[in-house]
Length: 247
Image (tube, rainbow, N blue to C red; front, side, top):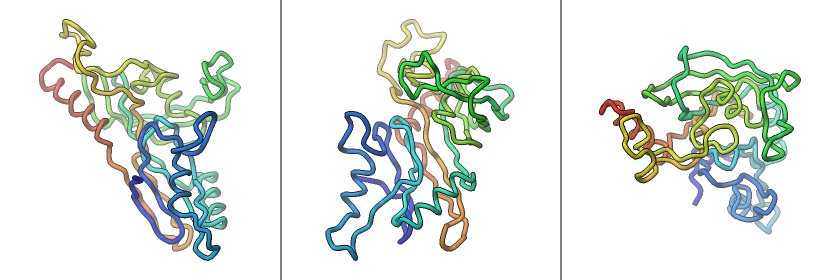
């Protein structure tokens, strides 16, 4: 049931759906991305056996591109590429409000939140690790925006923390924003906000594009994942509300 965006004998990329963890953690032991990859590639015969290794991670609620490799040598090559920032990552996100100006760089260190609801919850703090994110507004709505995000560093929950710090949290973010679903009725002219069916109930963050030099051929490899149906529908609904003068 995995959707492959790219594959060759050395590496591959899949389109991870929201709600799927990339590897077993806590009480989640089955149904993860790595479980599914092992089921696809592992074989009893040594000459046919392939051990897939993840090149990077995505949060469970984030959808989009996950790159993995098929050998230990490729694992080190890809790990070095990510560590040395030779991989360009682009995300798309729906956020509350419209950032102004429409493009810029957030330069704010990130560290653990001592009062966070989970051990992984982070915050902007002066003694945190350096963290930089480039943003650009792709599409404006009256009360929301679709933004393109490029992490220039790789901190835990970086995009979610930075957009919240900017004052434009990603929609449906239970840690750094507002967990409430997005409703078509959520606009000033609605008599009963939130009364109708929800448009979106999951974190509105999608790993959209990944670019890197292929570790074997050296050619530029660009992998793209379009917006999934739920996020695309949310964009369409917000756009229709703008046309109606309501959003």
